[in-house]
Structure formats: structure tokens, C-alpha cells
Length: 352
Image 1 (tube, one colour):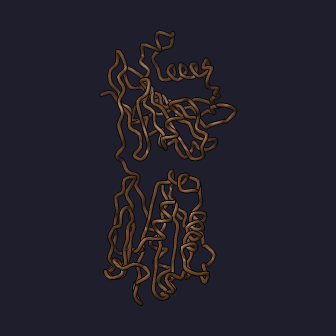
Image 2 (cartoon, one colour):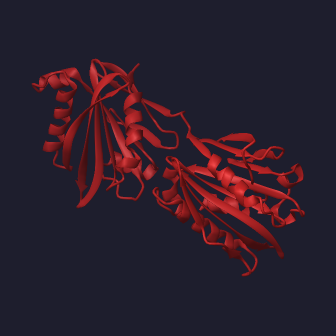
Image 3 (cartoon, rainbow, N blue to C red):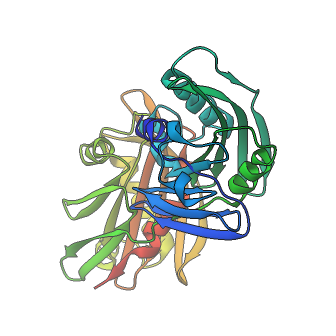
């Protein structure tokens, strides 16, 4: 569990409040926090670190002097939680408990006590926090920990102090309340060449995996999910998601006695699934929508593979000479977490 291990064993840790601000850009996104005026801040790898004085920022936690306060904030997209031993829908309290348990395992003796976690729900975020005392190298350190869950990411804020400070609980909460995480807008682009209509491209999110296969742009949250999409094996692992982008020329639809409307294109795709012997699928009602000012339709469904049910979402968007079709699959009851990704992918499709 990389994010727990890094935070527990790091030589420097963090703290912040509301007067000064700092941001750290990582491969997956951009962390934002506020910290007390007069404090110092920096970065350590992908994490934000800060302290009440420069000495504390650059000193290992076990060497903090009386009055020193230091800390760290770590953040990752929610989609990484499955690989870290939790679920994408894990609560802030669950993340906090796992992190505290890991810290207790790193402590040098059993004289460690943590208070019961307090949970707070604010606008678009959930915060769980606690405080305690840990023994490191024969020294007791006051530890303040908060886990924050937003709509697309989680963060862990840790403050270490050499001696008790009645203000640190409120500072911890202020830092956690200020936590933001913006997913990296830079996404990878793949292209396909479709006879008679030209070259089309689509983006998939940074941190995902993608490839072109049989004139389709495939993507998945993990290499394994990508392979399952390629091999039509479903998405059996928890918190995995995968999708495909297809380009359907107007001429193909007219050849099947369909017209050239989005509804015709959607009906054509539903017909394809209806006659497919390898994939059993059921779909609900079709919903008209608009993506980037273009006519589009979407429909939710369920895919069945080897007796296992998966959530499905299909989006059809008018591209002019062709239609873009986005098909996403997730484990049962998980599509709500990935619908916005599918819509972003659909919005990214364009002709070169």
C-alpha cells in the first residue's frame, strides 16, 4: 500500500491552515491546500509538505525539537483505491482507520493511543479526523490525522508535533477543509482511420491505459481491464472500468435501411447487441442529450458474461459524416462513478 507506507515512513510530515496556499502538480492531478501564515511549505515527490519553521520542514520526524510542527498531505484519485486495498466508494473514516492501523504497526511499542474518529460532512467532501500519541525511537509524538474524500479524490493530512499544542486540532481541520484535487486535464490521444470518412481521435484520462484494436479505441483503468475489453471478457474485478470508442459511418447505416439520425445510429447499435452471440445484454430507455452542441443519445444497460452481470453505458454522438459510439462497462452498480468519464470521452471525439 504505497500511499500508506510513504506517509508513515516519510522523514518529514505536514501542516497548514488558511492564510497561505500551496499547490503541487502530480502525474494524476493537482493538489491544493491552505496553511497558516508565516509557515513554510514545499514538496516531497508527489506530496505537499510544510512546517511552522524551516528547520522542522527539513528534519526527520524523530528529530523534531520542542515546538517543531511538521506534516504532509498525500492525495490520489479515487480510482486508485482498489489497488491500495480499499474500494472506490470507501468512506473517509475507512481510509483513516486503515492509515492509523498502519501507523500503529510502525510505532516502536504498544503505548500508543488514538481517539475515536470524528466524521464531518461538508459541501462535496467528507472528513474524518483523529489525534493520538505514537512512540518513535523512544520518543512520544503527538499525531493529528485527517482523511478527506471529495468527488474524485482522497487526501490524507498528517501533523506531527514534539509537544502538545491545543491549536493543532483546529489547524488540521482547516487544512482538510481546504483540500482540493483537480484531475490532470492532460489525457492521451489515440487515432483510428475509417475508410471513406477519414481519421478520428479520442482522448482517454491520464492514468488510464489505452490502445487501438480492430479500428476501435480501447481504454481501461488498469492493464488488466484493458485486456478484458480487448478480449471481450467483461470487467470482473472490483473498481475496474473499461470502454471502447467506435466510429460508425453514415453510409453503413443507410446500407442497413437506417436513416442518418442519432436515433437511427442508436437503434443500429442496439440491434448489433441483439444479434451478438457472444454478449448477452439488456438496455433500458434511450435518453436524448447534447454533447458539445452535437446531438447525442445515451442508454444504460446490463451486460452478462459467463453468468456475471456488469453495468453498461452506451453513448452515440453525431460527428457529421459519422457517429461516435462510446461503450463503457463496470462492475455491477458502479457505472455512476464512471459516467462522467464516458461523457468526457464522447466529447473528445473529433475528426482530424
